[in-house]
Image 1 (cartoon, rainbow, N blue to C red):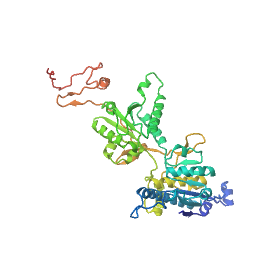
Image 2: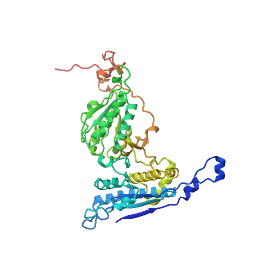
Image 3: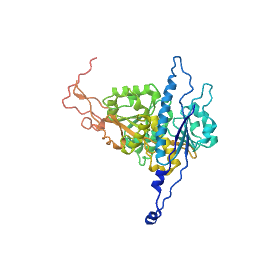
Image 4: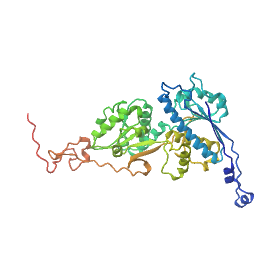
Length: 452
């Protein structure tokens, strides 16, 4: 079954805004002509599963129900974006198609649907992208992807735009920040070598490259050290405890996502066991949605993540766009609706650039970048946020971290200093001589000689 939604608006608003009479033009020496905008035709492929067989009892499979919920969120995002474009004077025609094959495995859309469209949005499911991608390429249509796809489906030329934020770009931005703010701290990356091995490699490469640019004098390689790594796994943090010290600030980085939930649980336990040490933790965006990571711990560790596809609730200029979505869907937009809304709005503005003055996105302007010449366009819109005051706050609104102040630890039984490793003794001139010899601590009890 094919759902058809038509959003067509006249150009009255645009013409009224751009029209200037001849007298005014002579006075201001500026002449602006009305602009004729062609209809933008969209084909939107979403997993409604209209032909999926029900289970016994008349229930749909759980996967189908969830995909249909996501499809409806995306559809509401399309409707809200098309409504904005229509009010801005950009007529839009939308064909909403079911990407899920029928019971015989046949697509529920034809070549004619794709041929008529200027831009194809979707599908969401990988197996369906593989079917439709060659057809889109043969027709020379623009293609917007809303979900993460394998490289062979994305890198098909500049006609493809991957709207889902590229995790690699977020990790690279995180590495640049850590190198800029913690270049003299101990930075440890927990390497899992799991599904996110490419992200771990990218973080190490970018961090080390940034550090090497600071090597200008003899000894700088010691001051601006390269990244320290700990070999863990998807279930453990390896020998991280050996890299933690209470006498330095410990910057711990993990860029593995939900496939390494067990590692993050182990990391939380390890850091809690070393509660006398100072930690700053940088992590994968998906850690924000892991329920076992406690809020007070995230705030204590200054947990910082690259986040994207988030609504700028604090920006009052976006209230109208949010209200428009509420009028369409009856609820606030989720991440699927938000991404779809802004991707379709971006396509409309590229089709009619003058509409940019009359539309408002939910997240902000999408940052597009080509990773290779004549390659696909990737959305690299990421913002670094830190958990503070029970919310994710932009880093540019957070105060700078205070310098780390090392401290001595006293054994209450003997009222004496707990021995400090030799390489840190120079930090405590009140307890150690320059050569590392201990200075008797005032009030320390006499140590008893061990008995044979």
